[in-house]
Length: 279
Ligand code: C2E
Ligand code: CA
Ligand code: CA
Ligand code: CA
Image 1 (tube, rainbow, N blue to C red):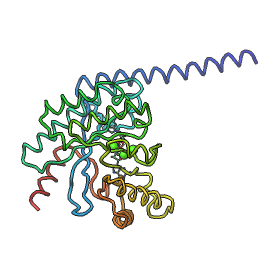
Image 2 (image 1 turned 180 degrees about the horizontal axis):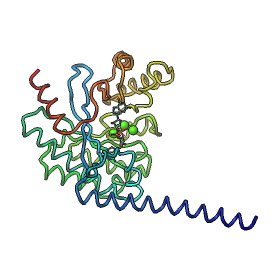
Image 3 (image 1 turned 135 degrees about the horizontal axis):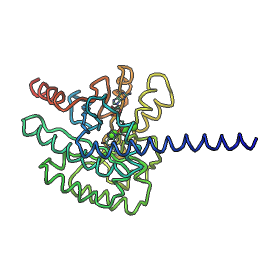
Image 4 (image 1 turned 120 degrees about the vertical axis):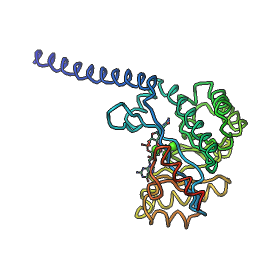
């Protein structure tokens, strides 16, 4: 029995160290990918409910290793967050998105809002406000077109410092939204206290709009609450006409989802925006 126990132990440490070395390998590859410029941004159009025209895009990062399949963010963002690599990666995303936005304006396309995801680590990094100020200045992208997507988790921690940071960001003239709204712990008090412009209803609620009474009530409540608090409200992950009909009846301001557009490379988005301008 003793012998067997030792084997089991050895087996477990082996399995553990395999997992650890795989993580280390991935971390090393991610660092190199950032240095070698292997990340790309795709952009998903955000749709105005009244006109069904695009009002902006959300920038979504992908990893494109040479001669391999594109890697989705779920496969590397969690590790990038754990290791802190999300801070330089997030900086790259912000710079790149604002440069792209400027290039679209220079090409004569309608000025879009560009929404960029922030991670908790970036939010807590202490120099976020300076970074955003510098990126806006360097890129020449208009501040009032940049929207940073926060999560409820960021807004819970250390409320005093959070208010200071959010006010400093708002003073730059940018817009702030809460991503994946409804999955965390926001309270009405927080929403009133923080200078937020928009709520993005999490796609898990939108998914159930057709047949789940709870999801319908939660979604309708978030939309009604947004109206009272004078916030914009967007529904994420809109995939079907039934979901759209419910959202329309509930008075949702903006939509995002495969029913309208999937995230696409910058060149494809530019073509769509050029068509919008013509029509
Ligand atoms: P998210 O911010 O909630 O982004 C929306 C995700 O939903 C995107 O997945 C998008 O492709 C997907 N989506 C859009 N419409 C639909 C739809 O109709 N149906 C379904 N099923 N999905 C839809 P993606 O691009 O794989 O990104 C996943 C997550 O990775 C994002 O979720 C965000 O949390 C994170 N992420 C992406 N880019 C960045 C980034 O630059 N920085 C940070 N910190 N996180 C990022
Ligand atoms: Ca987002
Ligand atoms: Ca989201
Ligand atoms: Ca999400």
